[in-house]
Length: 64
Image (cartoon, rainbow, N blue to C red; front, side, top):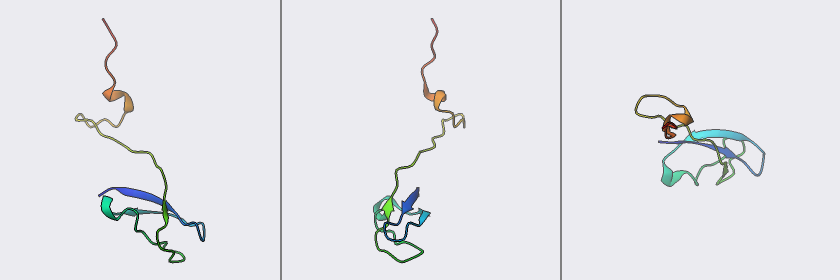
């Protein structure tokens, strides 16, 4: 399951939750209990088959 970052519009709390994709928009604030905290846009880390987390690992090689 993915980890999402959230922001509460009511109290301003910022927090993370590991939830399924289908429940990602149904998270309550742990500080004030506001229903449906707002999901933030965040970076995604990807791993290649070689185990490298570098973004250049997927880039085509430049050479002739």
